[in-house]
Length: 123
Image (cartoon, rainbow, N blue to C red):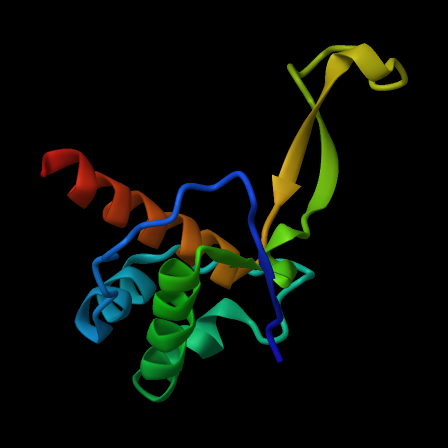
């Protein structure tokens, strides 16, 4: 179950644009087939059964927008150090950069937020 925690520094949207099933379905279909260790199911499986899951994902995202909350599970990431350039000394920490691997739904949520904010920016 996804739990939500109230954000205190986030302005509330009085009348948030509801997230529609068809928009979420397009976003799922367009997403890359990358799976994180945080995902409960592989991305290809979510994409394969997206018709069954889209309504639940849409409701979750809409609730999050309307209540100005963010699911706690989406705050997690796997941090992996990557070498900045080939040929650099891998034993030195300064030659690495951190890369955050997010869950599939967390990445999808970022896309939804971007589209909602872009909608408000055009108003």
